Image (tube, rainbow over all chains, first blue to last red; front, side, top):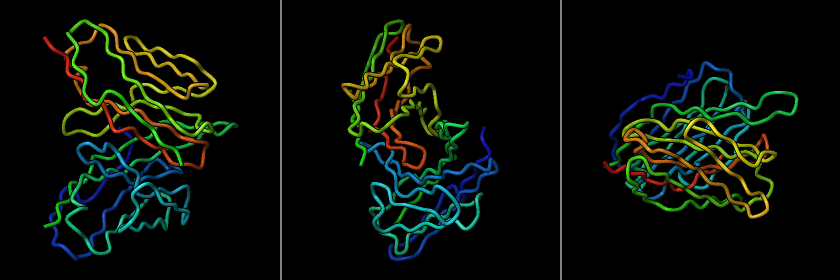
Length: 117
Length: 112
């Protein structure tokens, strides 16, 4: 398995509290992504990063912020958690290789199950 | 932005038969199309991918076809086995600095 670790693996938090999820990689991959997975919706992109301090919004970015201060870490923060943010969160990493910078597969972390009560 | 539609949402096939899952994408600039398999309680894992300069790719019982003109791509699994039961996701990525957008997934059931 690719060296990608998410923490925590499980978290229960109260509505209105801030929450930070961490994604750590040891592969030195340029691209990092945060997805949420909900029944009937598949994997929806929250935010992604294409380099240190370079981030952009995904499909469902409202209520979430991210930071990437170094290559190996990508943090997802819920500023004020709501029940609608109860979900399984996956981090993924990928790289572009070769002279043509072709895309390669994305490797996923184990996921974080977040429950907001 | 890119939008990926995936059909069907659920598919049941008899063991030994073939399964086909279809996806369409909206952005003609997308050039990389991976397929992921997710078993219950586990992370998605790549099973096959195809780039826009190729029309078909095979890996044992799995094949993917791409029609750039129609902007659709399909996953074909032949001689299905019980261990093929899982959720399958298609995805599309545009260029090297863009996001990977997933379809909503297909739950595949292999019937004994």
